Image (cartoon, rainbow, N blue to C red; front, side, top):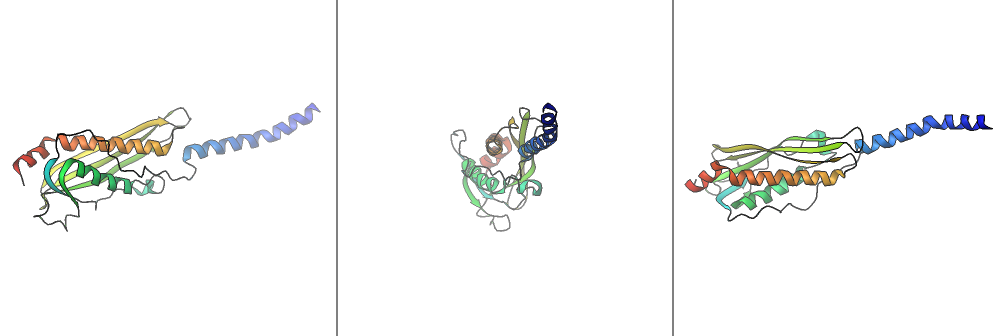
Length: 198
C-alpha cells in the first residue's frame, strides 16, 4: 500500500512542479496583460508664485511611445495629456500645435517632448526589487527653430515582484512630471528668455 502511494505521488510530483513553474512565469512576465497608467491627469505640482510669462506652442509630433512597450504598458496618451497640463501649469499662455502650424506672431516658443527611455525590470523572485524608469527629452525652441533649452528628465518608481504594475507606472509618471516641472521653472535659460522677451 505504501509503495502504491509513493508511486502515485512520484507521478504527480513533476506535474505539480510544472504547474507551479507556469504560475510563477505568468506572474512575472505579466501573463499577457496590458497595464495602463491612470486616466486622471496629474495635477499635484508645488504651488508657484506665478506662471512664466511666455506664449508657448506645444508640439507633440515627436515620438512619445516605444514599440516594445506600447502593447504592454502604453504611455503615449498619458504623456501627451500630462505634457499639455504641465505646459499650462508652467507657462502663462499655451496652445497645442505643431511648429509648422504655429504662427510666429502667436507663439514665442515651441515646447516639444520626446520619449527616450522606458523600461521595467522584473525580479527573479517576488520580494526582490522591481523598477519602472522613464526618460523624456524636453526641447524649447523659438518658432524659427533656434534652440533655447534642451534637457532630459527621468522619473522612476520602485517596488517588488508583487507590486501592482499599474500603480508603479503611475508613480513613475508622477515622478517624471514633477521633475520636469522643476527643471522648467528653475532653469536660468528659460527665465532669461522670459525677462528679455521674444
